[in-house]
Length: 143
Length: 357
Picture 1: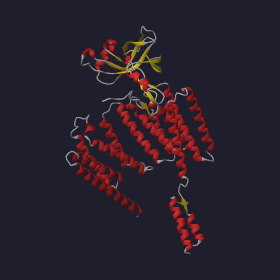
Picture 2: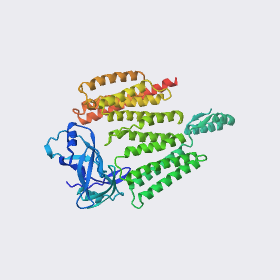
Picture 3: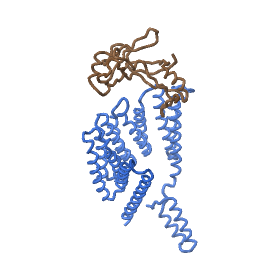
């Protein structure tokens, strides 16, 4: 059966485009070894983590350098939360998730569809302002 | 002190006295004197309802204008509009207070809605996430002083409803404990006692808010579900058994509703799933619950009748739905409901009769 794209809406804030950021999904190599131990030690609950960012070769684009449990000294980092995973059952294949960034971009009523389609295909870039680990979404645009 | 009766009753008296005068049974002076003993109640209620509804509609309109996120105006400009409109409506309310009290209230209500819209506008403009609980907290804090100033029941009810929404932040993604309520719940009760004239509605909202707070607090401490439900149940029973003197019917009803709903929840095994004795606990509880209900029924409690009906129905549906033909299930279910209705009406009539004697 065919499905159609949905236009998500918040009753108070209005229409939005849902976003999922590449830096919020990562594998074990990206995580600081001490954090890996911490994650394995407990089975539930939230953990505050920090993502250190680095500029990627193409200029304006930033990507993930590493995820740590300690507040980094670098200027450019994001504060977020991660769930305890326990021991990953399928070894190193486990993908880890963390929540660092706002995942809703509010748009005018009935205008989100185009952006939503691009978002589903991973064709969107987001412009952010970051200070002290806190990010504010400025704008989104097609790649 | 004039005796207050409803408007239709007053009209009826007036018509009958006219009729009696025409028949020459009653003297016109007598009719006037007797009628002067009565006063039609709330003759301007209709006006108030119109004005309140108007204000609520405009409020919803403004909120949905913000949710529409119309691109024609920049967020900054919209914010300016909101601030100006907010000030203007409050000023209009203030100016009209003396001569047009009810219209003035409407102006204040619209102002309070605009204030909330401003909060949501800021969240939307900066693409803030998961802030809905904080938004409602701020909205409630912002309109509580208005309720205090105007001695207004409706604003206070809305503020407590917003605080109930805020209390659920414990269940949100970030799991924030709603500690502000430690301050705001006493403030609400205090305001009702000292300023709002001991309104039953505010008392009920306060009890609901306190219940929501306790449940959410336990949730954020990671306490098992059955403990929270059992606590609310116990609180409800206590409130129904020992009602507050000034709020007797309110305590009685809200206590009964709380223990009725949580009691029926606790008869289901899933409420006890975190407990080792999951298999026996619901049955032990149901037995105790039934004894408690019998005690309340002996005291002629109307809510207890409702709870008993709901409990019987819950077991009826549980046991029979699986193996009875559908048509029989519905017919017997309907008969049960009609029987309950009859029981309820009969007891209510008897209680009223006893009061009249």
